[in-house]
Length: 476
Image 1 (cartoon, rainbow, N blue to C red):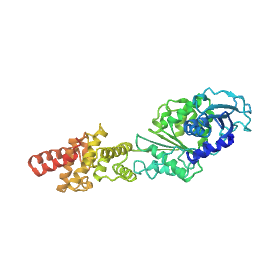
Image 2 (image 1 turned 135 degrees about the vertical axis):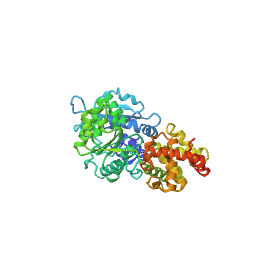
Image 3 (image 1 turned 120 degrees about the vertical axis):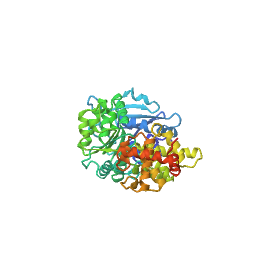
Image 4 (image 1 turned 135 degrees about the horizontal axis):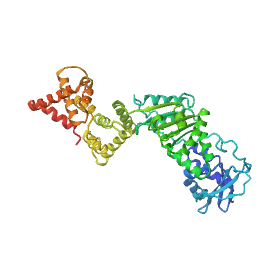
């Protein structure tokens, strides 16, 4: 017995349900209606061209396989897209597009309307079949609050993010703009807020999208004359997260459509979260009306993490990956890579990879070799903090004593040695070295260096100290 279009599509849905997320199925497949089956061609009705393009971009491979399974190698799928007539005609047009030729959408022939008992899109904020969305949020489950290490560098942004997650659209932080340099955790925090909102409010529609993706979608919408569908889709979000919003700079049309989406979301109490590499006041090429809206809520910055935060980040990463490294290696990585969390985690991964590939145990020597290659421009200069740590470990002294005002002989000697190596191995000024060593002035640093030079010429035990320490500090 030949199957009809309803039976074929039902069989397809059973397979699709096993291969996509429940949210994806509810959003993108439940609204589809089978129309007819003729000559091994199954025609399905979708609510808009934007809807069609989403299916083609994300699910076309799956659809092709299933159609071939149900209808054989000659089986094909066509879309019947209900669109509003430009002449305010109450009858929707039907556009047919074969899934085997995606480009056909640009020049798709318009046929006579199919009488599907559907009314055209009237409410500009609703697309039929997408009334209350559970879209694929594009959130990375690894970027959660649990995996985001808090420190002085990010406490304001993290606290604001958590407040937004607990009451999206209901705080003064709307929009919440998170800004900071490369690799400091902007994207991680934005995802974490979205994930927390989804956990607390499963019914809310959360969408994360990069500014680049948003721009490309808008360009496609202009090309295909579907800007209204594009805008309507974004206006239905409960929480919209736009990453790297500074890339809208200079793109007037993209800024214009985002301005209207922003206004609609904000006026209807929806939450907007933005990330940027700079604060609004420093954004060039952005319309003033957008910049003023960015300032409506809270702009929270992410700063360079402190040493303690960098060590905590590495230990968290090690714990989650089931890795155990010597403390001296972890500390060396944290001391060596100071400005970028992404580089810090990348260095850890590189170190583990090198150890595995070369069948070498992970020790301080291997870490120094790896850092030398990993941070080519800065690796040849160790930091003052690291020098102080190595000196204190060598003499078994707490680093707080080295930076204190105490005049005990062994402390003074360790402090002078730290100053000596800081002058020898870094490009820091004498004043900067003194500031790191308990607020000493440049004259004290010069005196310390002269004292160390004199002692190494007359005291062989002292000279041995310096040789041992130089080996530990050497990164060649």
